[in-house]
Image 1 (spheres, rainbow, N blue to C red):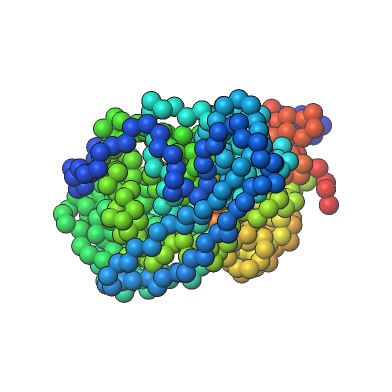
Image 2: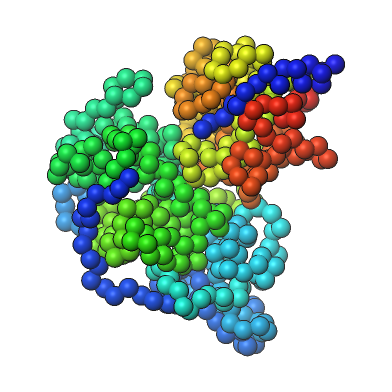
Length: 538
């Protein structure tokens, strides 16, 4: 009876899902000749190349202590004093391993074995370690990996220097004490008097930065620095009308205005950052058609920055921007002080043995819903495939109200509620920059849970709608974050809801939910094969 009813209801559903030319160069030519071929990462803190015929025991490995970094005050009009990104020295002598030279790589927080293998161009079963490596999950930071050296000497590699820590790119604990409005007002530039009209009404310049940071989970310091570096909006005045209309230089009428320019920027920062996390991105291309291979020991934050600046610049321009002493990062530090010091105080992005807390499907038991979207982007078009879509079964199509309740998948404190969004902070500290957080998107304003309310598992969040973002029909967009970083639904920490495990498809939205021998394939048209019922698990 239940299945027959479900077939009739689901068949009535229609598609339900979330769905230029650059300006003249400002950067000139980089004076240093472009490097060709691989240069061993002498300044990298994470890897070195060794020969495979040494014979000292593994116990002879000696690791130096990590350096201590002292944060510098955030200067405004003071002279810039360069502070280098961290470089940890280390020496090691491995056991004798046949098969040619190896790369010794010391894992970083957030590393996943399949991604590391893709960056180095090897298979996962070719990577060995003195430690027993987990078959699934993240690798503990500082784990020694011995990787066959398969680097191509005929291609051009990027520098191995890490420019910016991961938690200065995502909206993490390093931004907890940062007051965007106060900084913008004190800076006194064009942004301090800027206003923009969005769907919800007029919003100040600092309000645009804050909203962009929260929605995309991008650090507001980074957005401000990019805006000032490219267009002088924060501490100065744009030089022409083009930089007022298109402050980041992306000339497309669909991205006119600061809010949409920042959305475009966040999209590309996320594309690089999360593409590096998963191993999907190993090289980058430039506006002049050239391509370089990314050094495999870089961190996600640096790659996110590199990828963004590659979108609008030639290789020579990009090399100048990436210069540590005179490029973007010296500009960034002049605005905000030492990012590595803040990162050290905030701690690692991912603690050892991190797992998702228990979560349930976000709707009532024995109530038919439809799995309309497999893993797809968390917010903008690109970035991590962190979100799942569910639609309440209905005999009406399109963006219509629905009385069925969205329920809390886990307990926590509501820290954001508005514009179709509810965010629940699972550790209850009142910040979505720390710990586990759940995003519920397209939640109707009517009956939506307010900010400050504590919800237990299965408490009511609100009703599915089309509010917030872009939607072709009433549904719930559902995603997770940890320490400000979106967590891929099908990755080292899989999305598990009432025992159903999310699996990505060949394309975004085309994934599955698997529970034992049961498989439900996502269907944006809401056909019966995508019906899902939550069992009574109370």
